[in-house]
Image (cartoon, rainbow over all chains, first blue to last red; front, side, top):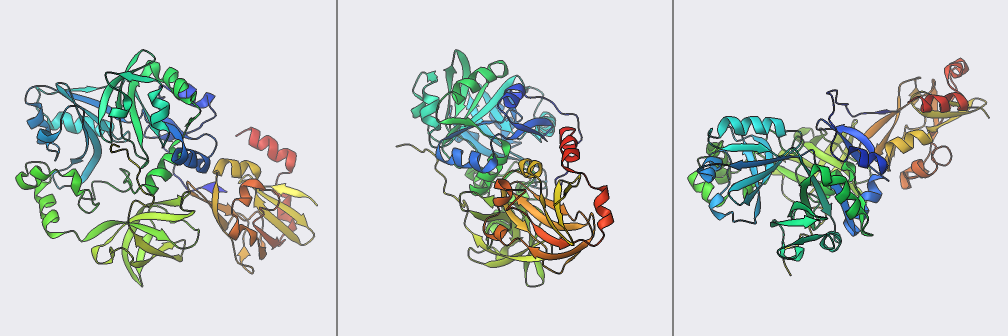
Length: 376
Length: 123
């Protein structure tokens, strides 16, 4: 027996919760330059726990960046296709780091803090992102990498109940709706909580001091609704939620329009341009793209993984970018770029896995409905 | 009936000219939740160390190798309906396939239960 995954060989760093994960029985694997928990009791059990209760994920490998300085909005709009005139204090928004050709360098979250902008970027790309931002932002803009901060995600239908018992602030946690954030206190520690995540469930991302991470993780996992969840279930949850993962579904070789991320190019910017890759992106918004990122439901039980080729008859029409087994649906699902003429929902395609052709159907995403809290 | 183990975490029960092959409890524990097993068809010729089956967990696909030379005589059809048998009964009902023993001499290079246990402890 041998695992087909390629091990990473770079020296690995440890996250603030490293010992905590091991004490809770996590299996640790190399990921984004860190040793990270892939699972505790098992991916399917952890996946189902998150869908039904609340899961605590350590995402401290992600980069937390704080930008400040004169004419900050204009400087950042020259780098990101975001409309900061419509991003108010207390709001968070999805955006994209694009190269000059419109390829995706990273996807990220932008929040407006008082006198600054707070960015959360992917762990595997954070050093490149910092270099890119430093190179393309004026010298007057200060970039702080908040590497003393940990980041925990509490996700699931019971996340709000569990977190509300510990988070106190100027207003109750329930005042936060999806993509809003605020300053709170947990066990005397100052934290920032955003109502967001990457599982499709209601949930929160909590930025907290690294030295308080174990104490706060203990506090949250002391609640009956909460268990620690590994990266394995995080991946199967985001797959069911139809959310792209950088380095797999998004890369410099993909444009955000192919990936259906047109909402990441804010309306004013589509007209005005003035961001990297605007010429190509605006052309693709107007004319469409030759290929599109689609969801695929597979017949049978055999999963198709990243890299599997998609066919119509003898013609190769696409490539799988993420794929696996959906615990919620009890069936394999995948995401792929396919030629636009084969991207309609309901189109029958085939995926080749180890010389066999698996029947697949283009299906709407998310595969499992989102349950974000948008207000009552 | 002697049972042998490979350093790729397959087990093999030998009964005269026939052998039953599966993956060990250690292996299923490492793989996690098994969602699909691709088994060789009866009549398939196997070569020691060559690909014999594929086991898919939620996370990834892993190859299972033939412990000895021989020919597949039966695949465990119970795994089609319930791949999780590999997790719950890896060294029993969750067997993968039966095969002929093409070269009994190849068994001598494999580990016995005690040898395999100390091998796992060293990992």
